[in-house]
Length: 251
Image (cartoon, rainbow, N blue to C red; front, side, top):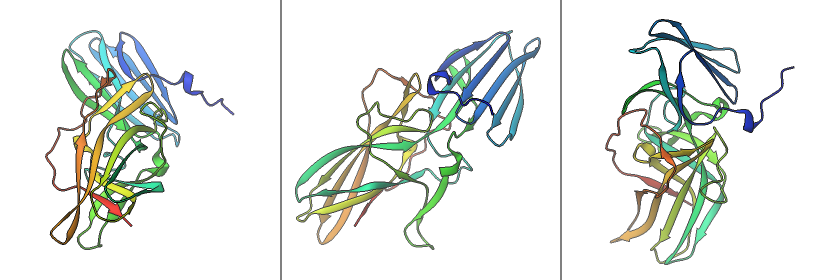
């Protein structure tokens, strides 16, 4: 039985320049990029089930530059939605007129980009955790919102991500209602949240959740909360699209 690489032996996020060949090793995933002719390279990715993805990459020069990064968890097994549905492992109770902030382990995928000067082309995407890559429906069957669903745990701080599997998302919750509320889940379009990386760690722009009442109707306001960091920002796997309302689950 082959030895499973430790985290320290996995490839790090970042830029790679290929003149002959490059091998990248991630959990349950191996990638090889190899020069096969003048200004031409081959690309092979194999997962834990020995499924292989292959491509030929023409190049304008005798070297190839690629960037390995964390990306939003929207593409695997298929791109069907821009929303994520995060179910907390522990409920968060807020008294009336109170606020709290928590850190969540939010799922990610991995992207590989071809780098041409300042331009970056999407070459490939995959997940290192396919077992937990699934869809969920928030709301009634006939009119609910399709989401990427994940049961998530709390993180200690912004740097407490599980390498190649998730990034850390800060959620600030403010209860402006006149009674206590338990929050057990959050649903929002993650397409508006940028992802940042450092070595093998990832963090994600946070969100601000406000529980309010207008007239006799309770509603939830959720907004993206950009973070300030010196970590490198990941490219977008797809152009950002403006989205509609966001929601948070209350119980």
